[in-house]
Length: 213
Image (cartoon, rainbow, N blue to C red; front, side, top):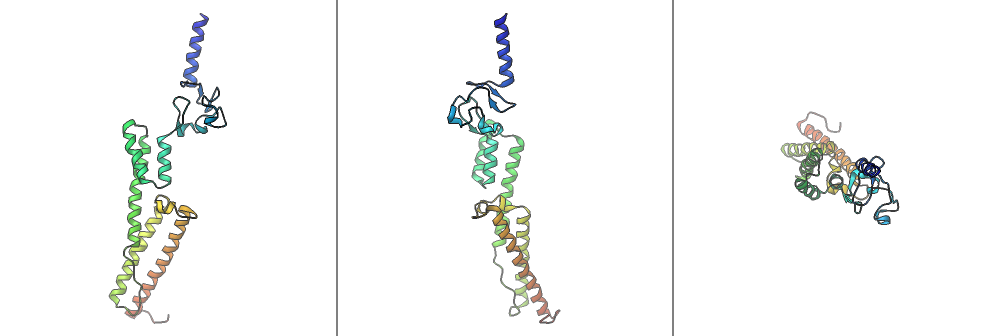
């Protein structure tokens, strides 16, 4: 009778705590009940699980930490690694280890990267010329249209926070994405001033304002 009770108690304990191949684990506290089976190779804290981040890693047998696919996906997006994100999504189809929400977020991120690259290209191509009273009205109008297009592309780029998903901005030294974003805001201000000069130049050519005013 006592043996049967012990067996039942052990079975219940295993269900409540989650027994791996080598140790008991308490999912509520996120710690091992016994010392880490791999001892100091798992860190100086012999009672922690997955570096105290149990949802960001997998340790099926208490012997090796394997990065969670979701955590790896977040890290890849944070560093602007398009190929890494695509590889993780491709691999998720085999084991179904990513949630539908994580997959949807990654696909939306990839779509945003494509859009941001297109906006960045539109800003730099073509290069707009300076407006001048020495140019024909048609040439100045063309330059004005060019500045309008550039400003629209850069404004949308900044609105989408593209500097936080494109690898070139993320890798900007020093400052990373924040520094790149600040520089692009400064560029937009310069382009808006250039656009204003074009409007004034065309008005001077048309005689709608007096030179010097």
